[in-house]
Image (cartoon, rainbow, N blue to C red; front, side):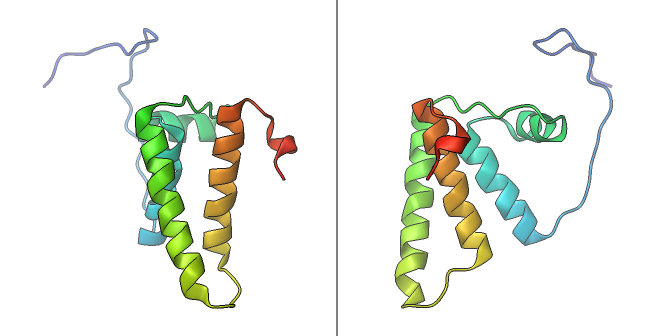
Length: 111
């Protein structure tokens, strides 16, 4: 058995919490985690405990935003006049909130 360690905030983390999600839900969670710049554990804990997700702009976050925007653009081009899916709109809203948050503006200020 491995040695017991405390985390950065001097807490014992000895309980494991697990749950199942669909592949689509997993992809949505992974997108939000990458765009936040947090670890998956920190992101999920913050969301579950209703804490704000504070995105710290760093090269990894900027690259993730760039790649996700490229994916969104490709998908929008392929629609050819059709209505975008709710999933795509949710991704665009997440990117928008992330960019406004990095800019220091409140979510209410988002267009």
